[in-house]
Structure formats: structure tokens, C-alpha cells
Image (cartoon, rainbow, N blue to C red; front, side, top):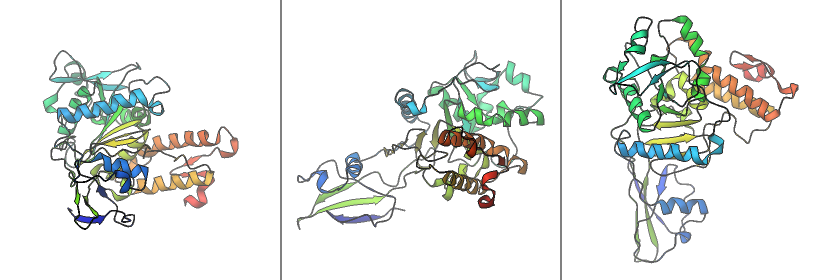
Length: 381
């Protein structure tokens, strides 16, 4: 929705609806410092940001170079995001470099160290499309897979990973033998390590299916320009419009992006040290340190903490876990048998969180029971 409102200098706008961006024009017809308009230091940065730009396509070279700058900056400046232990490649990855640049290759890693991107996406309705099976496994290894044969989302992910300087990609449909119950069970148990060990997770937020692509080709915020002008009556009038900023905070409850409706993707997002979201409106960067986006709005906190730093009591941790389970229950899974495996990584991480908060005190050790914790059974039920 596009809306326009005018406010006068000094007007209290705290009661106005959320989601409004306020900005000034680049030039003024008179001298009025920003400090006269905003009362808080954090507000001034929003005013000074002025006009923001969202690239028309998140698959453009310019967009992916912006994403690469976010990744490079995170690696160089975010101690909180740095790996504390060596990261090993998953059992299998898709090797993006080979003799034939038009093909990618299924690779058994044999436990070597390395960097890779992981893909989080929706399979979508209909047939599975191109997957790895017992019959084509050796062909995928020895002769590779034509990039043109890949579903569009996977094809886009291959391109993005290459531009970002990552030589390997993990995609479930290609790196797990889909018609082997044994292989699926083995790899599903390692899903936590796959996403937590990835250098970056590419998240196809705005796509309902693997055939719809990772990139969004008609990105736009409803607000890109702001202006102010001199009022003959002596007051400054500030022109503001509604913004469709792709906020991640609280998004899980609203289910505003297709990927938020899939059960597995909750774990994939929370386990990953860094996520590059390709939303319907813009690209959004999310890591353990901060969130950033194309419209240049930045938060110096992560929205992906499994246990927010303010929680210091056992009861607070249990309540937060119950919130996670409630949000997870809203999502759908293709197979009912996936319900526990799709939460397994979060369980393991939550156990570590409890140890980090309370140490090795035996009084706070707990046992996980199918979505609940033994010491919280009464409240959890």
C-alpha cells in the first residue's frame, strides 16, 4: 500500500503505525539541522540515510557483489561469527569447478575440511524433478550434472555460490540418495552439522518451489524517495511514506514468506552462522552479529538467537523453547515422520545453550522427550 502523511517539526510520531520510514531531501531550502527534527541519536541515522536503493534483480552482478561485500565484512570484522573449530565438508557436496564449466559434480568428501554454501528452499508441489538416486549416483559423480538440467532455484544457487567465491554447494536433493531409506536416515541425523558448518546458507525465501528460482527479478520497496520543504507559515513539513521493509523480526509468526511455512527451514535458518535471504522485496543479510539489507537499514543485533542473551533463568529458557515449538508446529512437512528429525538440530543446540548459561551444574541437566524437556513437562504439556 502506498500512503502519504505530513508531520510538523516537533510532532511526536511515536504513536504512528509501525513500518513507516522517514527521510529528508538531499537539499534544503533553509538551514535546519537534523538534531532539530529528531530527538534520539539512533533516529538521526535514519534521517541521514536519505534515499535508499533496492536493485531490480537480486540475481544481478551488482546485487551479488553487494552480498559478497556483506560476506567479506562478516569474515573480517565479526568475531562472533568466526568458526571456533575447523569446518569439515558434509559427506557429499556439489563441486562447482570442473573441466566442463557447464556441469557440476557430485563429490564424496571423505571428511576433508573446506568451505561450502548450503541451500534452504521449498521443494514445492508435483514431482521431485532432478534428484540423486541409486541409479544415477555414479553418473552424477563421474560425468556430472548439466547446470541447465537443474531446477531453477538450484541453478541460481550454483551461480550465486560461484560469485561469492565458494567452490562447493550442499543441496539435499542432490547430496542425499533420495531412494535410499538408510542414506536419508544417516544424512538427516547430520543436518545440524551441515547447516552449522556452512560458510553461508542461501535462503530462497520468496519461492514456493524449486522451479521458481532463488532470485527475485522485480524487487522494489514501496518507498524510495523522501522530500521536505519550507512551509511559509514557518514550520518544516516532513514528507513520509509507507515502507515494505523485509523485516525478519517476528516474521516467523506472520508466515509472510513461503519458506516460513516449511518445517525443515526453521532449523536450517537457526543453525546457520550466516544466511543470505532472497525475499520478495530485497536481499537481507543475517549473521550471528547483525542483520543488513539493501535498503540500508541495519540492526546491530541478530534475530536468530536460539536463546536471547537476556534470558538467565531456567524457567526463561524453557519458556523460550516452548515458543520455538509453537512456531515450529505452525509449519508443514511433506512427511509426518520428519517431525522429530526436522527439530533434532535445534534440540542439540538448545542443550549446549543450557550448558553455556548454567555451566556443567548437574542440577540443570535435562532429558529431551519428543518436543518437551523432562524438567518442564508440566508447563510444556
